[in-house]
Length: 179
Image (cartoon, rainbow, N blue to C red; front, side, top):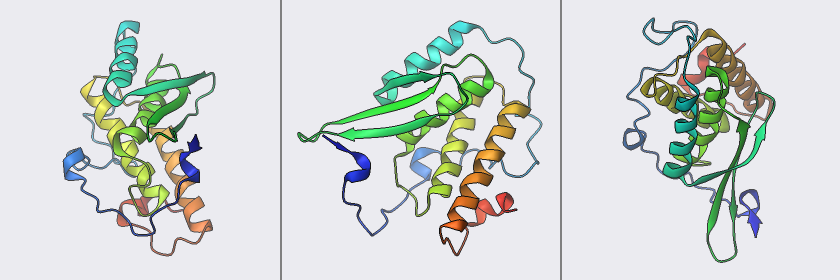
């Protein structure tokens, strides 16, 4: 069994088709100009809605939850076995609030979109967050100020990391996260 990071990477980027994954169907949520229709208060979401979110995500994307985390952080990864099978795993907080649901969906989004699909990791993170917001909107989970704060902090971190590691040309979608 090999961890996905141990597999030889193809140096040529794969062609990317965002239209087929619906990533451009939602307006990008960058900066502080969030459409009022998406900025909502937390309200009361029934626990059954979060249980349904977990069940649907696991069935649709064939993932397993490796560990339910106590903190608001997550990780998504794949294991590639010698027979060619792949096991998709995540570690994330159990969805109990809009923030924990956003983190959970963000990790699921890595499997939904695919790993190393974009030229730089910060662009992958950006599109995974866009997928997350689309899923939250579709499931009527509010995108609160706390969710947006987590999103902005995450994006600033990955853009800063990419620049530190030598990224020369920042994609246009990410200019709002510089500084």
